[in-house]
Image 1 (cartoon, rainbow, N blue to C red):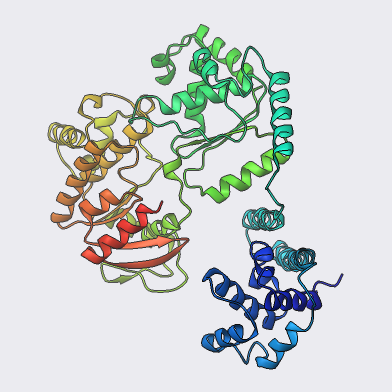
Image 2 (image 1 turned 180 degrees about the vertical axis):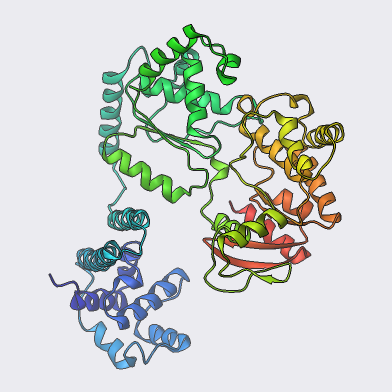
Length: 519
């Protein structure tokens, strides 16, 4: 197959040069990189820039614009531009020509992309999971690039489509529910169920039951025969299973969580588990996933007819900006490709596992998003554990732990076990534990996600106090308010790259404010 159409490229550019009406017909269908010939890319880039700037387009103005850009000779010179204008008599077929050029571009991109995937698949040093993600992304991009259909519809078409949609709703309506049932009659009456194409945000203060509500929706949808994909960034899959099991049975939650279930409850658990295991629910409890991972995974499930609904708990923990990679490098959990990392004057490079572990244990304290608390210890015991290893007496460390829990607003939860807490509460316990640790460097991953503004300010105040005690704090966050409260120096990361960094100056404050105002 010939993957280029240079004559048609010349015809398109020639039509744009001789007729003002030509470029608007293809401006939203073609981009400079879609042209095979590099000269044509330069000329078309010039044409689109002039069009967007509202400038008049003809042979002379285009030549002057290319001179201004320093691209005239690389584009073939003035004579080549004049020649292009003689390649076509009018713009009569320009849209058809553009469609063919676009298809040739897609063919070239497909060949290049699949060749790269083939090489990666055959390379034993490459992670096959990354290759599969690249494959999904390539298909997504190619499908997106091919979607240049005209979405403009006349009223006759629009009304016919609306009537067909209404007929489909009537056909699948069950007691007025046309979408996925929520299991809550009053909510279903108001919404007609969860509809295709909707994005529903469950928003509430911390610890009021957002996760419990989402899990109820998942079980209700699955019970109605709908496949549900659940991405749990906050809670382990086993804890979700516990919640589903307890919600679907009469088992005493306290006895179940503390290993005190009686024989009747154990028998009921096995029966309920067998029923729940038949539901089409798929759980991914990786605590550090990106939207790219979710999209690729959900698309794969959808292709297998295993995804009618996606639940993400919770969205704020998802990023993909590269912050988790940076955090792992700082924690000596991962290596870096370029640059230099010095920790207390020591070069962190090519360390043995034992040496890396020794440095981590001695110098670095972590609070990750997964809140790895000790499941058989209550909140005050979890916070007090670092003090135990520091040799603090039992009475004193418990008093100090209660003080730290009070700082994060959880003094009343001191006797509660981790499995009795929400993700936001467990996160605050982890913060209290980090405050109690005696490490020189404290690395916080989203320390205020899941907290309301009042508790966020309290945490920020304590972080500032820690820094004044001589601790080095490294905070990963999406929260501009936290940055404003705590920051002396910051780095702004986007798509895995440090876009800019510096002190907390007036210019950088405005820069950050402008960014968050656009999202």
